[in-house]
Length: 208
Image (cartoon, rainbow, N blue to C red):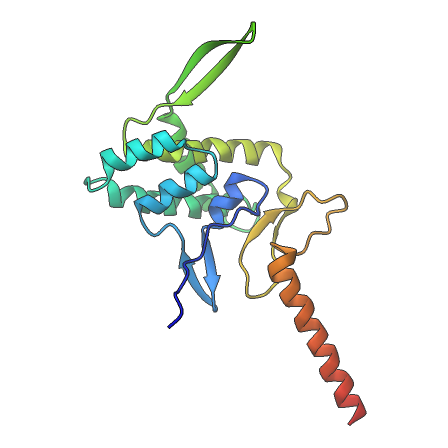
């Protein structure tokens, strides 16, 4: 029996916030949550460059098996739901938007950043890193990323892949705003093949 390979994270959104929302996908028409446990959340943050390998290993060692472990995964999923609401203004009611803003701002309120002055090559630079005192602080980098996205990007350019079986979203920064697929190599090819087969079928029907 062939080995079943679990779906990987998708980094096609052109921004960490959309990539975070894209951790909930559809497989064969059924929803699949890629943030299935604490380790998966940590892995996503490392791949999204929101957490260093050193921090991931430290948090994994300290918080795996703790009372807060399951809670942080549920909080991450809840944050994802709130961000989904915020990226589509006008499509939800005002109360939902306000609740989502409060959730994100609640994470930002707990943010503690340590800034260090560093000498490099005869010049000085500033390096900052977030401090993680409790598991919920792990979501702060995502909340900060949401502030960047929602205040500097045109939400009208957030699109959903045109493959009806795909739920992935991306920020269309193409030259003419004509991007249609999450990936031309996957959904793009599938839809082109489907369109070709449909044309062949119609042609055969006309000739019969």
